[in-house]
Image 1 (cartoon, rainbow, N blue to C red):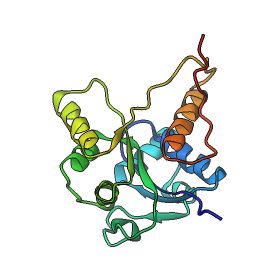
Image 2: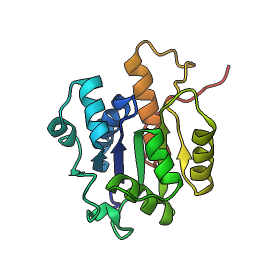
Image 3: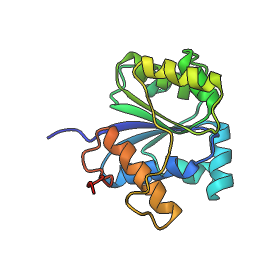
Image 4: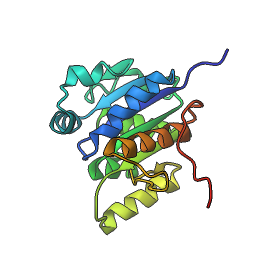
Length: 189
């Protein structure tokens, strides 16, 4: 019997908290085990955009870690996880990952994910991008990370914002190897 997927979900202060919350909820539904690291700005954003407090957010994960706890299990490559998603990812976090600044548990876990050659997906959320943003995205891509802005697909004719979020969540979970994730595929014309 194979082990369920084990994922780290990071949430930063970038707008789009519904993606991080959606990933936590859907990963659990699909049987994945989740570790959560939410920065203070991430928790503030979850509260502002979704009306949730830290306790409600942390209850969605199997394990929740403080961003200041750089001694947590996920700070080591020996922790058995399959990969990490930062949803959504601020430009500050992108820059820290791009430059190897393991200044908190979230960026340390991302650094470990890259060094262990595991999948790292950054749902970067900013617009428009400046040259520093683009160079940082290039650096993370060159290190093996995946830059995945939460850009909606419209070919499946979403009827609500929730439809758009749900499709993005399914696409990311499929990218992370969660076998039962079901993003809506383009079927051709």
